[in-house]
Image 1 (tube, protein in one colour):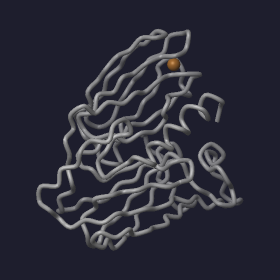
Image 2 (image 1 turned 90 degrees about the horizontal axis):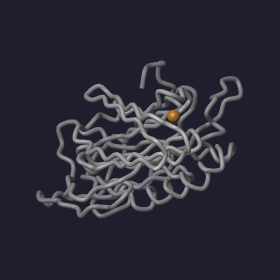
Image 3 (image 1 turned 120 degrees about the vertical axis):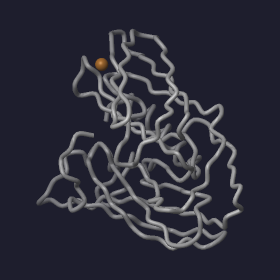
Length: 246
Ligand SMILES: [Cu+2]
């Protein structure tokens, strides 16, 4: 984790953790619309990574602040939808940014509502590229220092199918944008915490994906009306997904 990462990404993620609502982007929480008047509750959780010295996870030191506590940053969190309808909201004026600085995408991981306008920028004094790809779309942008290119991301993707960001010139650069067509998502902050408000009551399945570390866990919770349901999601090397192209 370099200095730029600490000072730019961590505060950004902290804000995501604070303001993430069921269906918001990191940039500007939109107004909720809940036309069906469905009963809802809130899920508050923490994602923990349990180290195993026999099976070291190469990304632990980048995303786990305290080995003993294990709070996992930059994990995407959502719910398994099945047949139920999730709260939607007005996606107008949703904007966010991905910068390239010191050979990093900043933020590295974010989750947005479909239709959000993303401004890609380059703060480094040399040429970068953004190649963005998932199963439904692919685009490439070349950026000189201080260039700005805006893209509206209109294609939602499943939590298993985020838009993966790479740079054609610097192969170590990686980033991910999760694009949801409902309001129930978040990204964990540096304390591993997340919050999903406005979740329909009843049995829900929370799914956590850590794209950089290729971890995935699903856990069922029972959401009560107008209550906060707390959940602790514990990942370990048992939850490494098969190596696949992200
Ligand atoms: Cu680059």
